[in-house]
Length: 94
Image 1 (cartoon, one colour):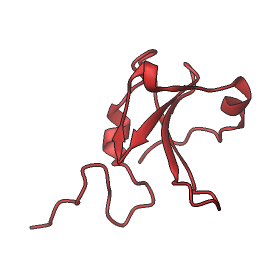
Image 2 (cartoon, one colour; image 1 turned 120 degrees about the vertical axis):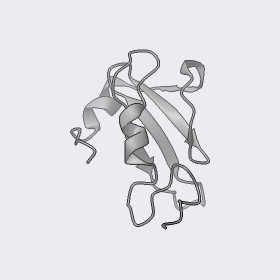
Image 3 (tube, helix red, strand yellow; image 1 turned 180 degrees about the horizontal axis):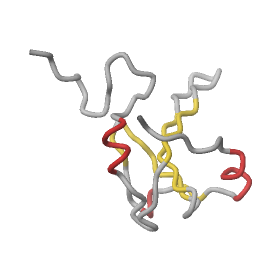
Image 4 (cartoon, helix red, strand yellow; image 1 turned 180 degrees about the vertical axis):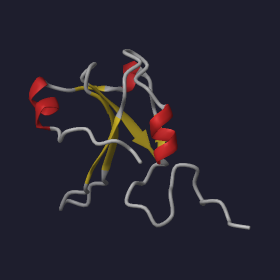
C-alpha cells in the first residue's frame, strides 16, 4: 500500500507543487474559466517564492498560501494586459 503525500497539494517526484488533478478541477470564481499555476522563484533578497493561480480571461492572479489556493476575488491581484501577454502558451495538464 502506498503512503499518501504529506500535503494534499504536493505530488512526490513531480516538478508541479500542486496536484495536477486538483488544478484540472479548479476554475476562476469570476469567469469559471481555466486557471494556470505560476511559480516565481525566490529573489536574491531572501524573499519567498510567489505562487499564484492565474485567470487569463479575468486578468486576475489568485495567491497560493502555504499550498492552499485562495480563490477569493478580493484577494486576487489585478494583472496588466502586458503580464498576461508575456505568459507562456497554455499546456494541457497530463
